[in-house]
Amino acid sequence: MKSDSNIFKVIGIREIKEFIDKKTSTRDLKLNIVIKTRQYAKRQRTWSRGQMRDWQKFNAEALSKFIKKL
Image (cartoon, rainbow, N blue to C red; front, side):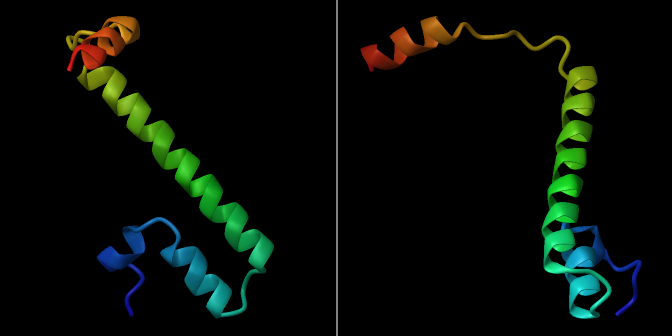
């Protein structure tokens, strides 16, 4: 399987392959997947901060009251 394949864009696939190939331990497998997931979440937050500036924020209390009315 080519390492530039789209499957390797999925978080954890490359790390699982390294584990199967006995290049890493179970502990490192879990740790690396957690790290990659956090990095991806941070990139999403950064992107959304720049792309959604004009979005209106909602008031959680007002939303709660609205849901109770339903």
